[in-house]
Length: 305
Image (cartoon, rainbow, N blue to C red; front, side, top):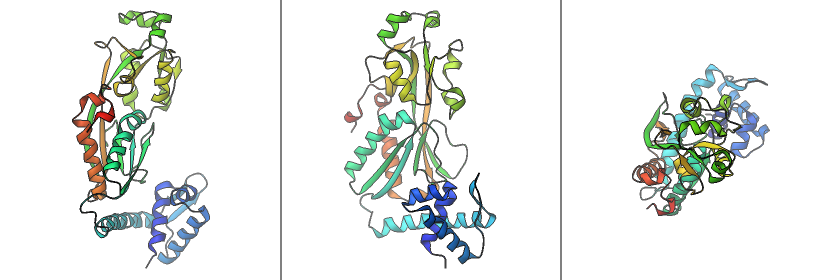
């Protein structure tokens, strides 16, 4: 029978496609990873990966067949671990939550900290990243994103709608003029995303609403846009849960320029029996769904109960 540790190494390589990346996630040397893969292939009598410098480790047909069984084994082990450790009363174990950069930093991280303080046997990683993460490659257990997954074996739920407005500072208005109409925007500078590096078309709102604008400062990071706007370098469309907390940022033409987007929360179906996954997901849904002022940037997270 194959060694479970070899299967565990196989799963990480299948998800990352690189021995070095799998080694980093497992906390071992990359030579250990390659040795384990060779050992597993010898046990099974089949090559599991095609290896190349350009594409790394690519699953063979045998590897794809093993992957489906290995993920089921992993899921069963997670379930068994919870039952054996007696998690009937409270959740325990580790959860990794990925969210968009600003929402993950402003809302999800403090809410996860509150949850962990209630359940000290939990450990939680929060990944606020300006990109999509792959649940298939186990980059995270729970994902919160601005697009509903189009397909896949996921438990999916709409988390909340949120609003974005055009913001500026008084220093910016003093330099480039007050904004009382859309015509006044022609004399202003703008801050936005780098178009060719957008990870979602949901972020392509400046050119849709104000097509005449030509941003002079661009960044892949909404946090960088926030600070650039705060320093008076230009106007920026920002989520209210981020910009609405700072009185120095003044919304512009709210009736004309307002955008609504949605957040979705989802996790793999194989994890739906894990108490820690379900309880943390429900905690985030309940808190955020019942506190609209939180998403509007008009309520500090510390006040949420």
